Length: 82
Image (tube, rainbow, N blue to C red; front, top):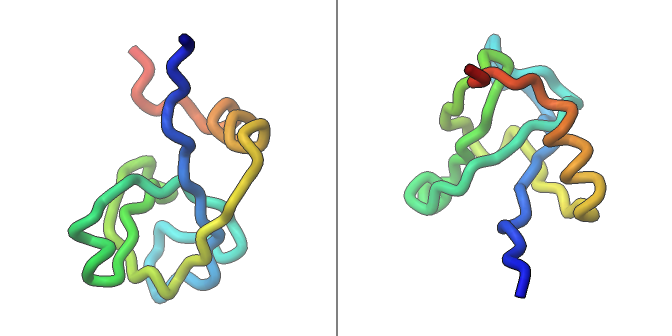
């Protein structure tokens, strides 16, 4: 049986909240962080290419078809490529 990786989570930025590394109306990848979620934060890979915590109210989580998720992942810059 083929193992499917967990779907990636993406969110649409509604506003930067003053953060320089967020662009409103842009889609960002969200990393799982249960502790952050309990405090109403999301761990987002921002424009710096690193993951940081941002208030969840700055984003709306998206439910995307797997094909769209794969396309977003392929289109992302390979920041950590050796």
